[in-house]
Image (cartoon, rainbow, N blue to C red; front, side, top):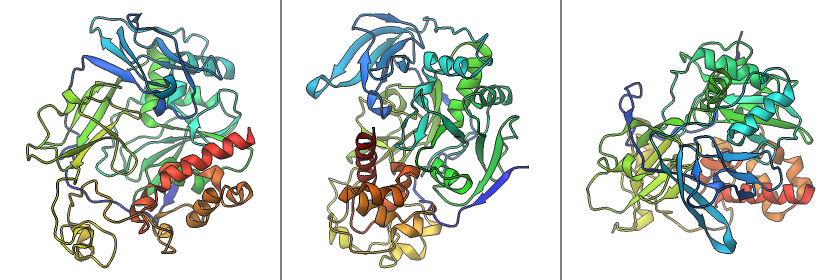
Amino acid sequence: MSIEIKLKKGLDLHLAGAVADPKAAPVKCQSDTVAVTPDDFTGIVPKTEVHEGDKVLAGQPLLRSKMCESLKIVSPAAGTVTAVVRGERRKIERIVVKVDPTGEALRHNTKDALKGRDQARDLLLASGLWAFTRQRPYDIVTLPEAEIRDIFVVGFDTAPLAVSDDSFTPDALEAGVKLLALLTDGKVYVSRRQGSSLPDIKGAEMVDVKGPHPAGTAGPLIAAIRPVNKGETVMTLSIETLERIGRLVLTGVVPMTTTVAVTGSEVTEPHTASCLIGSEIKPLLQVCIDDDHRHHRIISGNVLTGVKVGIDGYLQFPYTQITVIPEGDDVDEFMGWASLSPKKMSQSMSFPSHLFGRHRNFSPDARLLGGRRAMIMSGEYDKVFPMDILPEYLIKAIIAKDIDRMEQLGIYEVAPEDFALAEYVDTSKLELQKIVRQGLDYLRKELS
């Protein structure tokens, strides 16, 4: 018997550039190089394990955490380290590996992995898959020493233009759940879209979720089942990571391929592509960007939470989507942001698009369309925020750095992605995700 959750609050953004047939076979894409970006793994202060010119196996550590030597970030492919890119104050920005198609993968001994908690944790740390998990509070890579109350696996994605794949191997999912169950005295919950073809997984508590975005994220799932209190830690991960864990248990090797949805209004034929995690962006977009002489914004991820990258950039965690939209800096529009064009996408009833927004796919660009200002509208965030939290008051407490107030308002339950929709509908144009990230980092620093 599964748990049923129905979200009444939220918002599905109807954008042009969706994949026409998500179940079609993905296009295979070869990348000459792959890269690991430490900033994708929040909470890890990295130090390098390799130097330029070193030969590495797929799954071999490239970086370790300074605070926990056993926490590693591994190479997605076998090959040669061609660059250790550093920024200001010698911060490691990325490590680039030239792919050797004939190279081998590091094989792990999984014989004792299911014997106990320590063995299961050691395998995930050694394989690099521990870095693919997140914990709440703080929305950072799960601390290896944390006592995990429950584990939440997000089984589908409701972000704009995202593609959810139900074609997982049941044996791998079951093996992954079996290993994760050793890490906690609580339960392993796996969410799925109501009506999905994803079967029940032995050992997991299945959760059928209905409702608009952010139904496919961890925050509402945790809040509806068992919210996080002060002093508790829960682990979250995607179902793709769960399958990788299961395949590791079954074969001793971590699968380093991923299926990426190439989407957006500036993509001529949106499709899915199969490639290595951390692959180059250029081969994925080489022949499918619309040649309309407009400036393009390439986003690794979705339009709400993704990271802006260049055509010479790399896929960034969680490695499942690329979105290409107009930049908007080359647009000469009458009345600018105040234009009442029906082509303009907005949730405000002041715009004509509100009358038929549910029946039309819009093609927004990356312009801010207005200026940042103080919070002048109340109740905006609540309309799209499904968790039992007062988001506006929590944001104000974070800005004021009032720790007691933050704790009372539920700071331990949230992550920046939970505020992505609130940021979109915000009339004041505040960078809510950035504010929440700074608040979580400040809280962690003060309480550690």
